[in-house]
Amino acid sequence: MNATSADPPKRRKGNLFIVSAPSGAGKTTLCRALLDHVDDIYYSVSHTTRQPRGRERDGVDYFFIPRQEFLRGIETGRWAEWAEVHDYFYGTARDILETELNRGRDVLLDIDVQGMAQLVRQYPESITIFIMPPSMSALRERMEARGTDTAAVIEKRLANAEAEIAARDRYRHIIVNDRLPEAIRTLIDLVDGYRRSNA
Ligand code: ADP
Ligand code: 5GP
Image (cartoon, rainbow, N blue to C red):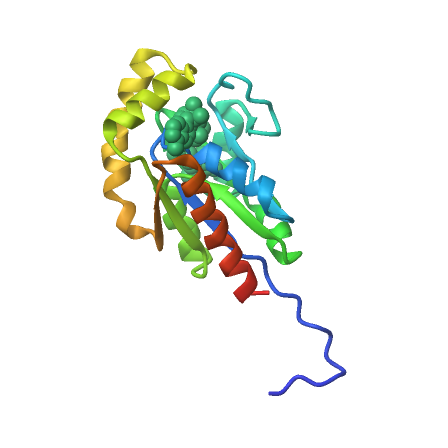
């Protein structure tokens, strides 16, 4: 059926950009740079049961909530996706995500591979991006330099990184974060390209 002038204008749905990486690969740094350069993209603030790290703020970096509240949210269908990562729960609130997408806003999510797989089932058009560290030694150095995790936590995250990196082929795009300015440019160009073609 053809659209007629009497039909209300179709509002396009926003693009869903899903970024994953092993901890320390530079995902937060890259996402912040992207948000600084690109207008009108909503960064999905996840809920987590872990404690704030460094300068993280509630409602900005994460919504930090008690474990009981998270578990209740699983029962009530509050999460569009959720996963247990490094002993803590992480999830994306369904109502916030759907409100933004239905308003036609693009959404950027920084979530792990389990969450990516759950969202791609619900939103097959999702644009999935995996950030790779240039090497495992660089990953270790970056976590040490960040200075926010204990040695034991770093060892655990490095052990998990192997499995996370093994999932990289499940993503549409892979960006190696070696030299930071180049990786930022690549991410911005990629996101801009999709936004222009779906405008
Ligand atoms: P993630 O969010 O993936 O855990 P971060 O963005 O917190 O990682 O980055 C981890 C550390 O590595 C930070 O101290 C950050 O400043 C640094 N970093 C990020 N990208 C690079 C890069 N390309 N080269 C060197 N250091 C980097
Ligand atoms: P961190 O504790 O380092 O901030 O994050 C640990 C891991 O949890 C990262 O891989 C990050 O992408 C993932 N993560 C953060 N928020 C969410 C979320 O809402 N859902 C899922 N599935 N993973 C998340």
